[in-house]
Image (cartoon, rainbow, N blue to C red; front, side):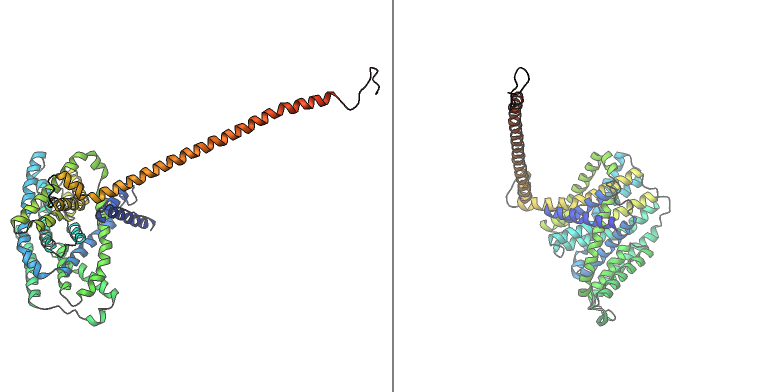
Length: 469
């Protein structure tokens, strides 16, 4: 229990510190996971339970997205979302194959790395869009559509990655699963669009019972995810479908405020789990390679996302915000990397590199998005140089740093003044003691001389014969 309390306290402190620096708190949660993980201070040595809670957090996030999803807006953005997601996957595969040929990777490793790079994080992107206040705007709608299309693509990706380890690839089964997933979602959207709100049984009895609402909605979410996984589809697909059903029911307004706190807690655990996966020793050994890979991935995905969104009809502002929000590598990339490693289709070094680049891209993505949005905003006001735009964008943070530096300078100055005053006081006390010691020494000889004089002359004299006179 003490470790859990300590981890929670550190996560809160790191989150508050990032808020103070005007950055998203989720970066602080990831840093807390790095610091407390096996390669950090070792407070958390096993991440199995943490990863389980993190997976639950992802399922609840997709469940929550489904509940808040506007069917009309989702249908309107579906075509663009599929086109953008397809373009992302194709471009990522081409780049990964070229890099794999250059670095000497096996072809199957290049394919897996392409899948890993293509995916974006639903958790991080949704959280950033919500913090920006655009989750329910045009930027949020198109980003959610693209992210859901990516999540649906995870199903065939996992089947392909598993087959690379030596198993036979069943193209017919893969096609059937993907087609079934698309048809189920399309049929559900069409059916819900034709009718009104779904009426949940016993609505009057449970609508004011918080415990039953929380437990029942979580059970429905996890049951749908389990059924989806057993059917060979992604569990997040089932959680998303369950969210759509609840979102179009009469209990939607009651369930959302009950589920939201649970979702927030589990998402913090998810961000902590990302930090736990980072191997600091591997990153330090391959520091420059990891940094270069992260820079290339984040910048290339940003440019590609923005270009694809612009080509498919989004305006400049929508393409910028939605594209930057998907610049990181996604949480399902961890699942693909683990599947590739367990199937012996991905080497140990390639796995650690994929995990490191994925985790670091998740770590820097909120900062990157914040930076580019600020630069774009101030650049639109007439600033022509990147340096001027950067200084203007981070004027508040620079002011905070300057005020902090001034406070430190004042503390150092007053510290020096107090130190000098203490030294002067010490020297003064020593001088007083030395003066007193000198006076004591001067008085001691005169007293001795008086004693000698008094000893040689007594009160009575004697004559030469020794008699008293």
